[in-house]
Image 1 (tube, protein in one colour):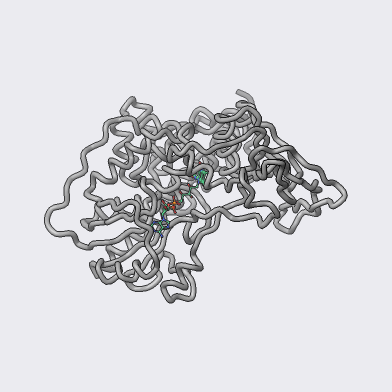
Image 2: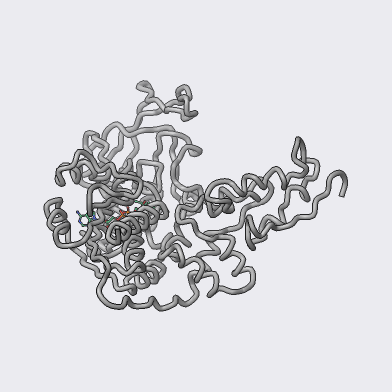
Length: 447
Ligand SMILES: Cc1cc2nc3c(=O)[nH]c(=O)nc-3n(C[C@H](O)[C@H](O)[C@H](O)COP(=O)(O)OP(=O)(O)OC[C@H]3O[C@@H](n4cnc5c(N)ncnc54)[C@H](O)[C@@H]3O)c2cc1C
């Protein structure tokens, strides 16, 4: 090798045992990249590896749960699937779920990224999660604290698991007839197989967590629960579809995306008439379009920006395209019009054009009044975002807002976690919020 050569060496104190970077060490791939004051490219990259949480590897630092990623990848590399799962379960009670749908910030943070495709950490977790689960050890004696958790989504489940691990007891409430929140009644099973979710639910419930389904709690009932339990965690998510406020939005044949996904996930066979038009560019729009494509032939997704600006995951967009969903970009809905039978028949659209980039670099797409048209539509699915009911909960509980401290504490014995307070976010972030609130409760109870 010409120029500066460098023998790749894994510094165990920094990065442990995954060794992925060894095969992609930039100093080997391109030695002449080593410039400036640092001796080698590895030397230039090493400080980044030791930034943040006390010198943790960047993948671990990027994970909201702080998973020991290099630890479990190392075990997998040694063929030790049980050992890998044991490491994962130290910080994460839903490994199968995250093995399927995590947005994997770890992979983006991997230092090997600039020179090779980072390891498929999410898929490797999915594999590890198939190992047999160790049986949870039952709590001995009376619980240290009894906590009511409102919502069985990832925030509520992770909170319940953490409480149980620390000697507390969680009672989970949910309005829906199934546990799991959006994991169970919004994310379609072709992305999150129900047996993977069931494996994780069984594991959490195996810790002695009690479940009360089909109970929609009001703020008044939550205030009562605060008297009955040592603490309450509100983890109700952002389960309401944001309405577009369009003329004709309530016509027969018009669905809100989240309602459509819920009916489909709960097995209620939503009726669609082709051609179907889905409006939106996020995960709800893409999931709805793919579910719709399984029911009818012709599905078109209309989005007001370009493909590059779609907030949905790239792999979902590619999958929808491969399944035959058609895309129209730079259009926004203006109105829905009825046909002879009274149901929706046309979606009126207006073209959009990119404006000047805002200071954050984001380009606004502005409506172009001279550019109007309409699409024939037997059914329309509007997927324009979700709203949390944070304002209504705050008013009902007599609080100014649901703004909490960093641990999710709103008031003594009252905590919040997940999408309810962050707005629509991700599974792993909701779990991290739930665990944080549970830990704070146990600290409060013990102090
Ligand atoms: C279609 C779709 C696809 C998604 N895909 C991904 C993905 O691939 N990866 C990813 O990381 N994230 C994804 N997300 C986001 C992710 O699902 C959420 O961020 C996460 O589920 C939020 O968790 P949570 O526990 O805060 O709330 P939720 O999962 O919304 O759970 C809240 C629960 O509280 C219950 N509840 C609400 N009000 C009450 C009440 N008054 N009384 C009793 N119970 C109540 C609800 O019924 C619900 O079951 C997706 C979201 C959607 C909608």
